[in-house]
Length: 466
Image (tube, rainbow, N blue to C red; front, side, top):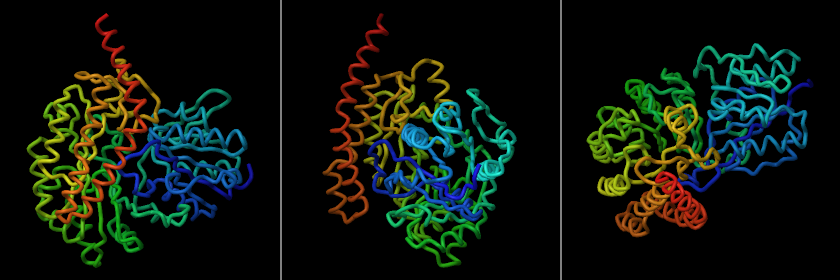
C-alpha cells in the first residue's frame, strides 16, 4: 500500500435532539488519536459532525478514514463508512468505540478493520503495518476479515498509559471555534460496576490517573476558560482530586469547570472547599433513582438519604447540580416517575435528565434483558435514553415513554423557567428555557413514535393475556 499521508477522522452526529444540544464539544478519543498521528508525520483532519458538516470530496481524497461511534451514532457511522467504500473501495476504513468493541462483526460488515477497546496504541500500529505491507495478525485488539471470515485478534494486554498521551490538539477539529467548552480527561476506568454502565466493560475497574502536572499544563493551554473534565467519575479518588485542585490554585488557574461525580463527593468538606475555590460551576451526578430497590438492582452503592444530603451540601457550597435519573428498572412503577419529579423540584436541582434505561451492549442489563427476550428493537439510533427499546416489568413501553416525557416537561416548565429568571438565576433560567423549547420540538417531532408505541403496547398486553 502507498504511504498513508492524509488521515480523516470522523465522529458521527447525534441522531436526535437532546438537552446538551447547545454544547459543541467533541468526545476526546479522536483529538487525542489525531494528535498522536500528527506527531508521527500524518496530515490529520477531524470532522465532528455535530460541529461541522462532512465534506465528502475531502474525505474521498484521504489515504485512510477512522470513525469513532457510540451505540446511538453507530448507524450514522455505518452510513458514512458505506458511502466511502461505495465511492472509493480502496480507502481503508477503520471503526472504533464502545459499540464496535462489543459488536465487532456488525461493524466489520461496513468497514475493513475494527479496533476493540482503547485505540491509542492499536491505530498507529495498524497504519504502520499497512504502510509496510506487513501482516495485521499480530496486532492486539484488532478485528478484520480474511475472505468472508471475521478474525478477532486477542485483546490488547495492557491498558493505555494516560501519561504517554499527548495534550490533544483541537486545531485538528474542523471549525473548532464553535466549541464552547474544552474537554479534558484526567482519568479512565471506574472502581464501581453499575449494572447499566459500559465504562467498566470498556475501560476496566482499575482507576487510572493522568499525571497532575500534565493536566495542569493542559489547563494552562485552554483559551476558552470553560472546562469539562471528561472523567466518568472525577472524584472517585478524592485524594488525587484534591492534589489536582490544590495545584490549580497554586498556578492561579480558576476556569469555570464542570465534571461528573457521585453522591459521595459531598462527604469530603475539604474537597468541596477546593471545588468552590477553583470555580467549579456545576457537577453532573448520576442519582439514577429515588427507589431504593432500583438503586440496589443498578448496583449503585448509594441510598436515597445520601442523594438528598449530597444535593443540600453541594448547594451550600454554591455548586450547581445536573441530576441524572434513569427510569424503567424492574422495580419502577409509574408512581416512581411522578415522585422523582417532585423530589427533583423539592430539592431544587438546577437541571436534570430523566432518561429511560438503555441496555447497552456489554452490560449486565443488556445480557439480562436480551436473554429474557424483552428487547424489542435493536435499531441503535434509538439507544440514546430518550426512546424506550425494551419491555418494562411494571408498565408498558408506551407508559414508560410518555411518563418520562411528561416528567421532563414538568421540570422544564415555562413557569419554572420564569421563576428562576425572577430570582436572578440566569444560568438556571436559560437552561430551563432551552429544555422547555427542546422538549416542545421533540414532542412534536415524535408524535408518530408515541402512536406506534401505544399500538405496540396494546398488542403486548393482548399477547400476554393469550
